[in-house]
Amino acid sequence: MEPIGAAARPSIGTGESTEGNVVRVRAAAGGVLTALALVTTAACGTETVAGSPTIESPTAGQPTFDPCTLPDDALREVGVDPATEDPDVFGVQASGWELCKWRGNQAFLVVFSTLRPIDEIKSNPKNTEFTPVTIGARDAVTYRETSDTRRENCDVAFGTEGGSIMVRIVTKDPRYVLPNPCELAVSATTTLDPHLPR
Image 1 (spheres, rainbow, N blue to C red):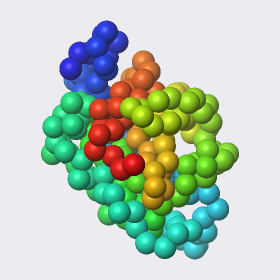
Image 2: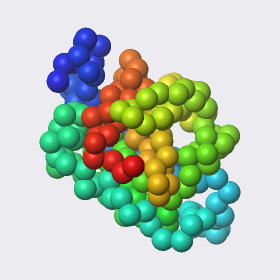
Image 3: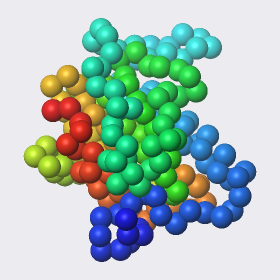
Image 4: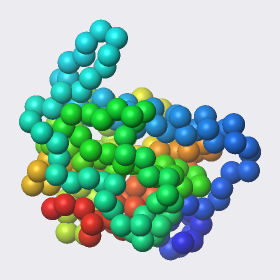
């Protein structure tokens, strides 16, 4: 893949930082926490029990699509290492959600499958800057969370027959802001599109 900013489709796997393992570990933890925040904030109207945050799905069961089944070749084309697959957040699975995370040199890729409809994601006041995009034959949107004031992350979301899919790019090193996370998110989603549910 070409480096970010080149004419070819951008990749999240180029330009690894050489700042040391401490920064990488801190950034990895931040990326995981960001992913957890997405699950929590995307789930509008959830209830919590003191001391133990939970996510309740309005629809019984788990999504039938498991993002961790995405093929290694497609993940490599996106620019992440399939060997870094992580199917949950700190060992916690959220009811009504499936997710999987992979690491690239500059960013994390997180793919979410949920039973929640796309309209719920669009109506969540914690999501902003919705921009219509086309992914293959799908109508989709890019958006950010209102808390992302440094514009480090971006999501692509679209509806499926069973709910919604979200593809998120999360900046890996907080000292380095990706030039255009939404461009990377659209590129990654386009690459993964043939393998995502309709």
